[in-house]
Length: 391
Ligand SMILES: [Mg+2]
Image (tube, rainbow, N blue to C red):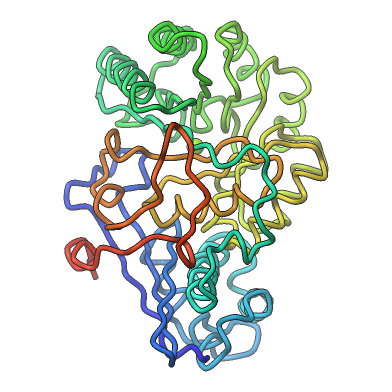
C-alpha cells in the first residue's frame, strides 16, 4: 500500500468570535489517501492556515522538506518510521511549535488508516487496553457571557446539565482574567474565581469530580497559590495552566506548595517539551493534546513517561469528535490516564464539534466503551466538511 494524496481542509464556523478563547471554532482536518482506496482522517488544534502551509509547502533542501512530499509514495503502515522521517526532514522549520502540530494531524490519520487496513481499532495497534480505569470523559464547560453574573450563571447551569447527562467529572473554564480571558472579561479580584467554584460545587454536590482551568491567568506562582488557597476547600481534582507556559521554575514551586494538583501541557509539542517539565517535577497532571504533541505516536510516548514518573495523564482536546476519538484510544493504552477532556455536543457552542462527524464514539453511563470499529472509529460528515471549508 502506498500514500497517493494528502488533502487539507481549513474549517471555520461562520459565527466565530475573535475575542473568544475557544479554539473549537476552527479546525484543520487532513485526509491521507492510498492506492488501495483507504483514507485516514486526522485533525490538529492550531492556526489551521499555517498548519496547512506546513503540510503543503514544498521543501528546497534536506533540512526543511515539506511534510506531504515526504509522505508521498510511502507505506502508510510504517507509522513510527514516517514520524521519524517527518521530524528529521522538517527539523529546521518544525521540531517544536506548529510543525509538530501539523505532523500530529498526519500521524493521527496514519493510525486511523492502519486500523482500517488491518480491521482493528487504534488502541489494539497501540499496545492493547492496559488502562484498568477504562476511558472516562470529563465534560469541559466554557460558558458564554460578557459579564461575570451571566458567565457564572451559565457555567453553573452547564455543570448541572453535565451531571444530568451522566458525566462523572466536569471542568470549569474560569477564564475571567489574564491574557487569554474569554470575551474580553477582566476580573482582577481572585475571590470572584473562588465564588464561581463554590457555586458550581454547591450546584452539583460532593460526588462529582470538578477541575478548574484558568487559562494562564496568574502572573507568578505566589499569586496563583494565593488564589488556589481561596477554593482549595472545594475538593478540586486539578488546577489547569495556572501560570505562563514557559515559567517552568514557577510551576515547580507551585507544585510543591499547592494543595490542589497542578495540570499543564495542552500546548506542548513533542515529548521533549514534556520531559522538561517532568524532569523538574513541574506538574502533577500531564495533559498532552494528541494533535499538538505530534499525534498518537508521540502522545503514547508522553503517557508512558508520565506512567514511569507516577503522574496522572488527562489528555487535552478542544476540537471535534476526531480528536476526542484519538484521546480515547490514547486513554485505553495509558495506564495512568484518569480522564479525557470531552466537549459534550449538548453543551458545546461550536457547530464543528456538533456536526463534523456523523458517527462518533458514544458515552454510556459516563464512560466511553472500548471502540470496536477499525481505526479511530469515527465517520466524517462530508457535507459539514464542504459547509465549513474556507480558503
Ligand atoms: Mg485548557
